[in-house]
Length: 229
Image (tube, rainbow, N blue to C red; front, side, top):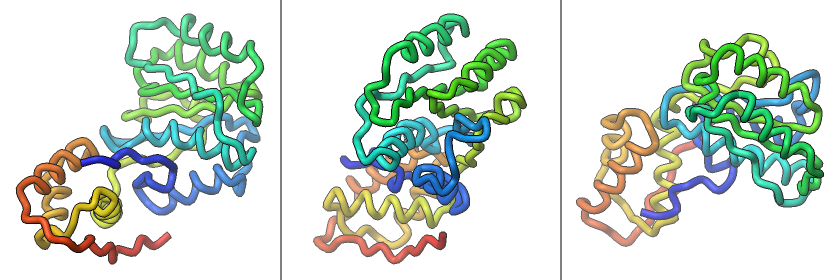
């Protein structure tokens, strides 16, 4: 099954309509950002809900909405799971900042993945880095409570826990139709969602398995699900 990876922020399945609205309002500057000391987003929630994917797409769509131009310089991705010291991480980030950004906005974008793995001193160093006016950062975490309060104060927090079944199902139907996959037996998609562990990896694996074991018809699945925003 192809076409499963989101290509823009509208393909992301958010935990709830409020979180989706906030992110879109930030992208389109209905919520001023970066402003008032807020230079980062913090996407928090359970494993496998699309936080890291959303982080990259947010940067992409934010730059496009702000400048009407595509992002040229990709975000610097920092995996906080690695054994790099915070001094090395900040040095890498500041090295990127030392060059003129190729992005029309002039911003440098950074993604700090699984930021809760940073030690308390490391989080304080990251907090200081977020004070720079030429950066836009996205932090992801599975454990919001492990992050420094001062660090979080510099972030707009976005709930990224698992979405309700109806929101997930709507996206699955769109994916199936984009793959030319057709009507499946009633309840098959529901079962794939209900019997998964809540992560997109598991859901897509189960849906793909169901496709290979379901009689295929020749009519696209009709998406009657209406997400109220």
